[in-house]
Image 1 (tube, one colour):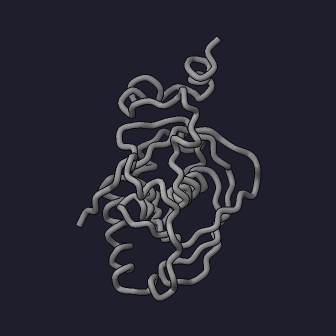
Image 2 (tube, rainbow, N blue to C red):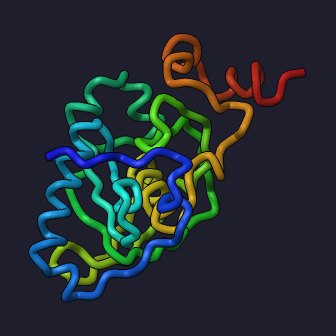
Length: 197
């Protein structure tokens, strides 16, 4: 069953999500929710989905970056983004720790802002302390695109959308990005529309 993905403007996307107790995590209801979120994320398609995006103010998100999606990209793009397959997993009640101050900018989209994209600076390396779907403590060390996915999903749990962090002049429709910019360098885009002379 595919769940409804809430779009920007819905109140739940702008409220801080609440933590889940161990009892709630282990409940059949939450376990079923995790499976439905995974199905919804894959169907969208996306690489992450947070509970507020389906209308639930819980600190829970699912993540998976499948190899077949990565294989659709050029080797240069994969290398530039440091994108590697990430197996399905769940993060609950996460704490984000930025290990290095180095940031990188890439275009991001969001299932809750369907049809749009923008250039977003994110930390290249991040650590996440959380609980998994069994309520067990987990520490995740991530870099590159995986670190970006985690930061994006944790932002959702803290009422933040990528549009709050984006280079505002880079905001565009996904169609125009595909038509004009997807094969251009970030430097070219910056010179053309972000910092035009």
